[in-house]
Amino acid sequence: MLRIFDQYIPVRKIAFFFLESIFIEGMVILGAYLRFLGDPTGFYHYDYLIVKALLIVACVQLSLYYFDLYDLKAFRSKIELGIRLLQSLGVSSILLAFLYYLFPLLIIGRGIFFISLGFMGVVIVSWRITYNHILKTRQLDQRIMIIGSGSLAKSIAKEIVEGVDTGFKLIGFITDHPERVGEKLLNPSIMGDQSQILDIATKERVDRIIVALEERRGKFPNAQLLECKMRGIAIEEGIHFYEHLTGRLQVESLHPSFLIFSEGFIKSKLTMWTKRVTEFVLSLFGLFLLSPVILVISLLIKIDSHGPVFYKQERVGERGKIFKLLKFRSMVEDAEANGPVWAEQDDKRNTRVGRWMRKWRIDEIPQMFNVLKGDMSFVGPRPERSFFVEKLRKEIPFYDQRFSIKPGVTGWAQIKYRYGASKEDALEKLKYDLYYIKNLSPLYDLIIIFETIKVVLFRKGAR
Image 1: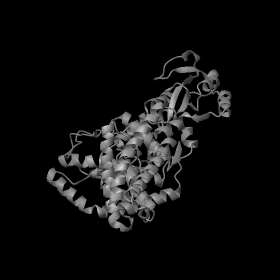
Image 2: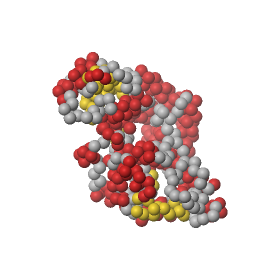
Image 3: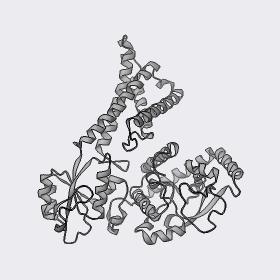
């Protein structure tokens, strides 16, 4: 895996993306060549063809990304792939038309565009079918062996076995309990004990060994692992491998030493200053730009149901500081007359306008006032209520660490995990929150904002 903008991305996915860029560029050039088939001079002297083709590549691939066509789990059939592709090419055409209006020098001929568009559709579908076929052969997968048989080992194995395009093939497990050899964990079995690590790794042509032992004192196979490393087999800590593979931290397996000594969790003053200044300017600009929307929504809320337009609620912020979160009221008045309860995705307490606002996340717009004031960031862990925080911090390890930064209007957990309304959901979201805090950077924030826009506009992904 390569680390790009604080995200770990498999090399094969990067290769897939850049090869597709070349294919799309090639189709535009082919379209130009066919357009001037009887006039080679026109083709060779066509102004800025490469630059114009690159603009088309950028718009098409941006549209493919927004329609989840780089996520192989997102579509279930070739028909769905075709529909999403048509939608994507339609959106990219509209985007290009807008750019051509702003920058006429970038316009490419209609004949070239429509010829290349047809070729692009065929190539994009063919490339994905070919790539899927390559994946099914598993020839490019790294062969993985896991040392350990506890919860961390099982979690890693589950991600590899159930993943669509992880780039890894699980060979089996090694245990520190010889009596468990042959026992089945998920699909692969326990292949041997620690004395057999080198022999099994050599025989099974293992590329990478993941160390996921629950207890290491007196049981760590130093000599065997060192010999494997000297023979060219990569050795990786299980907790780090899980993090890179999933984009979250396995909280149940964390030790305080991991948070203390691992790379990350360091928030430089420059990073935090840049984040604050950028968010202040963006929230000010956003409130000005959305002021007509705020006025219309306010009127709709007053017409739809009795009660105030805005809803203030105490939330726990950075370092446990209590602040008042501001939202458009989406529920009936006195919705919590009987005490605090988890909000649900299709909550019956929602008003008609409230259901519509929550569907599009419009109820979150007033939180820009919280960002302007400095109580919140655009990106960060979602702020929770004191009532739930007091319960969760007693039941979930490292829960307090999510308050080391300001809460956010959106966040890594919000775009990666479904709507949560239980302790189990809170634990899963914490895994994403800690990953974000560990890898916090302005570029990472930008990625999350782009993903949030995709979720809101197309209602795809998590909430």
